[in-house]
Image 1: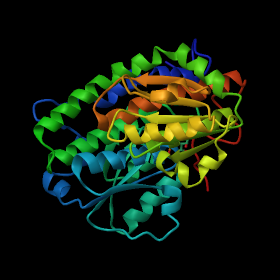
Image 2: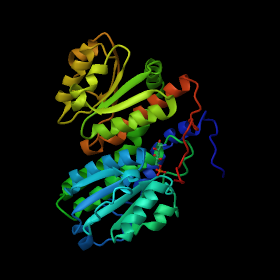
Image 3: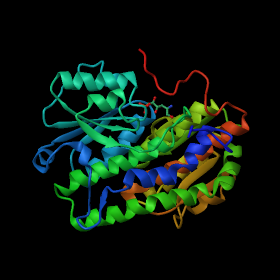
Length: 372
Ligand code: AGP
């Protein structure tokens, strides 16, 4: 059957709501409860080759690059392999050093993004090993890679990517788990993560069920000309993705910053006119994050906090310009980003709806950038 928006006002809306089913698909048949690991037959790497990896380098563009940063954190945390992400559009132009013991990972929904494709070709020309995390089966990037993980998100039409990104994160979780389990990740930790991963689809659904409440919060942000999205460590790529989604469809200036860097400059811009959306999960950094919220509240900056139930925001919550807190369900800390990002999609979507914008085809943008 043709893929249509149906009763939804836009493809983006439909695709956000499809996330629980899409997430279940990317995990399906790949979780091994018995050995606490993932099965990724498409990687085409045996245990010996996998153990020989000394570094992981992730390449993608736009939101795929931000999810790549989340993926790098997962690889470092679970597999203890140094990992980082870079915009493929920059990498291909800077004559990068290609190392034989680095695993390169190209991440792309369409599999046709020219910058990512040419980065892959450059790595292969120099003898590097590249795998793909790609949604579209048989696409150019999928064909160029030596192996990979298909994302099974189904067709995605809206320019603003949602379900493909969720599945990219889950794809990276599976990769990190498999890399971890042939190295030092314990079976107990592996099982803990498998258990967490299997809860993700229903937890995304719990957030989607609160759409009306989040739409109310969006109406308080839609009027602002300029906003900050802040987070740190695991939360920073979440903030980047939140700002990206917001600017793509609401056309508001949305800037992502590390919460820790606010006092080194951008705090000068915080005022009653400039709201901040802060990512404050319950983790090792909660207290420090709450400290930064005090700084924002003291400058009368309106605040929306994406957090977990039970996180004590102290006096911040009673400050005059406090707008809302949105609690997402708890999972394993490493997996928090995939849940923290969902309210940010809904905030961007509802702000853009209230502003009367074309949700699926924002001005100046194409779904995939396939020409130079
Ligand atoms: C996502 O909302 C964006 N429209 C954009 O950043 C996108 O993620 C980027 O262009 C990469 O596309 P790809 O995943 O198809 O390679």
